[in-house]
Length: 114
Image 1 (cartoon, helix red, strand yellow):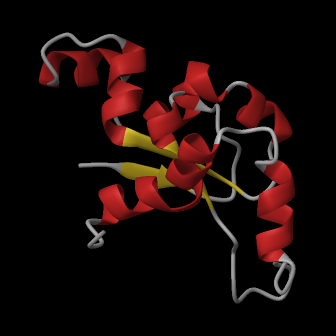
Image 2 (cartoon, one colour):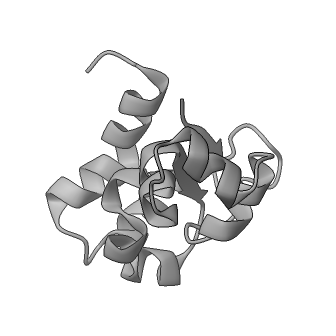
């Protein structure tokens, strides 16, 4: 099971674990005493619209747990400029990592065919 937190920043591990509704201690017991970071990497996905700090720290968060969100069709979303804004945000990110953030991580979480 995975949880995706949207309209937030990428690095809110502790907040995310609390929002899941269980204490870290309970999650550790249920997950064979995994450390907090392992719990995050197995079950929590951070979504972002604009988060330069999160992108810079992507390896600490876990590249497999970051997803881009566009917030379409809300009136305050960045459409029709979404692709350009995402390209700008990921300009210094290697292509394989950018593809995970922009597509592959969401496919895996939501079990979309690849």
